[in-house]
Length: 298
Image (cartoon, rainbow, N blue to C red; front, side, top):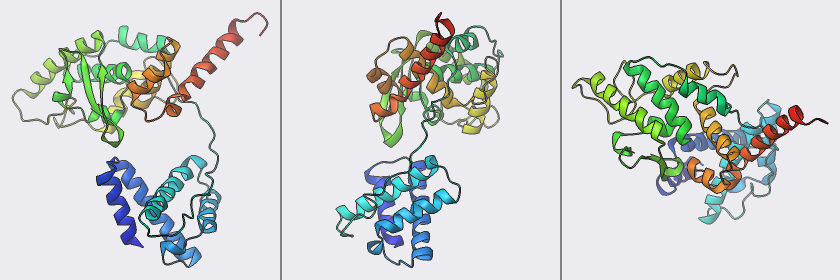
């Protein structure tokens, strides 16, 4: 059974160009499913798996306390795997085809209000040091461009075009997109790059734009998360203060300023408008709050 899983993982990695995180997630889900059907169902080949086996696995995960939001990605991996096997004629039927994913509760994305982020970028003083200029630029980059944390971490110097005020990022499934940079971000980047050169002082460093102050190598996600959390602590007390919150915040702000959904989709690099549409629910919830506060009959 392992050989077919390995073929599928190679297909995801080399033909579909899935991110390594997705490949690892799919691989783990399939290994867990294989262990289940062998130990609990006595099945020794993928061709022998039936729909009831897939359903019982899903039920077992839910009974073990896993939330629907955690079960659905695992089931998606199994569904994709059997579609792969069916297309290659390795199985006659797809046992996962009619298995319905458990219903997920629709949690609205966390975001920070526009006024609070304006205070952060206009009024909060970052230290006049390499780290201070780096941290302000990273926060501004995440908010102004809506890029993912991994996209920022993986930025190289060649990806930033200050003359044309654009930055090139490689998103999910290795898709490239160009994102405009607002003048304030260009100014911050120029100041940061000067500080970066002074910080390196002739040392050999990675091509990465953002470097750790200790190692001089590409900044880590854990450090970026701490930087964003500490920066947002200046303007909000909400519990969720991650880099992704800044991505949610710019999407919400742009929709509140009448940006069309397609433009926000292109900015964020979403594959589907359905993913971007979640922010319309966020803006509607904001409208309802304002309505309740301001309407004389509310």
